[in-house]
Amino acid sequence: MTVRYQGWNRRCGKTDVTMIPFARTDCDDTKVWKGEPSGEFTVRSAYKLLQEANLDSSNYLLQADTKDFYRKLWNLQLPTKILIFIWRISWNYIPSLVNLRSKRVTTIARCPRGCSAEEDSLHVFRQCPVSTDAWISLNMAWVTEHTDQSAWTWLTWVFSRGTKQQIRIFCYALWVIWNSRNQMLHEKKISSGRDLAFKVQNFLIELEGVRERKLTTTAVRSEHREEELWESIQFDATFDINNSISASRMVVRGQNGEIAASKSTLHSNVSSPYVVEALACLEATNLGISMGLNSVTVMGDSKTIIKKCKMGVRDKSVLGAIIVDIQNNKTRFQRIVFRYIQRAENVKAHDLAKEALRKGEGSYLVEETRETLDAGGRWPRNPN
Image 1 (tube, rainbow, N blue to C red):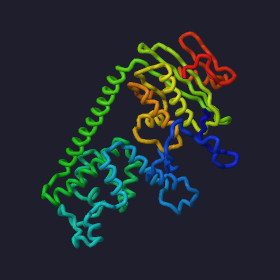
Image 2 (cartoon, rainbow, N blue to C red; image 1 turned 90 degrees about the horizontal axis):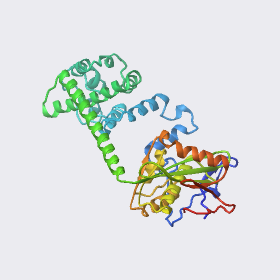
Image 3 (cartoon, rainbow, N blue to C red; image 1 turned 90 degrees about the vertical axis):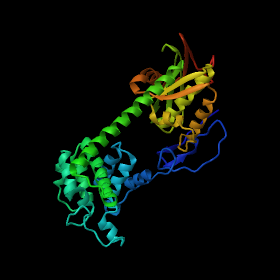
Image 4 (cartoon, rainbow, N blue to C red; image 1 turned 120 degrees about the vertical axis):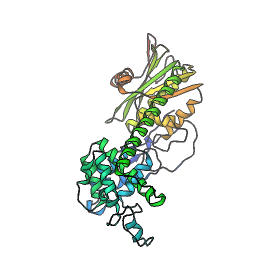
């Protein structure tokens, strides 16, 4: 069977129909979102398309400082509720008394902590004496040195000046300061700046501890589960972008790590490295089935492909047809695990794939016997 894969013809600027992927099993057509590799629509991908649009920089919002700020924010690995809260501050969407007055929810905007100033975002987090004491107790007094009367400018200034750890503490502190303000306003519970700093430090220690426990638990569970599996198949691929050809290579290892078999396959009309890796993974499952393996760990150094293979829902990306075949192959094993490994752990498969692409021929190796494809592209002793 000839399998074709979707691609982009650089010469004529049109989709090459000879490279459209087809699954070996029947599946319904579905709508996909081109801006996201998963095929699912996300606001993030819409922003990305706007950034890449050929527009005058004055005609759209996402300028360089804005992109840098949000890139740092979403990469802080903080709880989602805190990330969204910081995002709300950046857009002045928090219900400070000044904002509530503008919405005619209240007529009084004076700081509820007893200050004479009105309560806007900057006053709550930077100018109120309680907040100032909290920053001093956290050894973060430098965040109050900025005098610009814009919450957005203040946030971007702190993010550009502070280290990643300082920015994390800064975000925790904003969250705690706002919660303390609400407790004082609605529950009449008063906290000093030192109390707030103590809460921030404890909150930071607690969250870091939870993250470490999750990572440790996940690693232990994965290790115990994989220890039960006997054989493993490592896959990798190389791609010749100029000729749209690729070579995939699979290495089968026994329980003790010894190489039991290997196979290389050539592919033509391949559109991208992602398609190459997906094909290699599919070939790895096919090889496991042909060898009669019951329990196997399929390992590769492409996080994208491994993640898609673990998913239980239909993949809507350009790789969808190949992933469908992989998912169907999973039912042929008693147990199968897909695991990501570093490139350094996958050197053998990578080198063999490069060799196959250089020679321009597929091969099959069992123990000490190498067999090559005949002129018709058939295996003398076909493992699949």
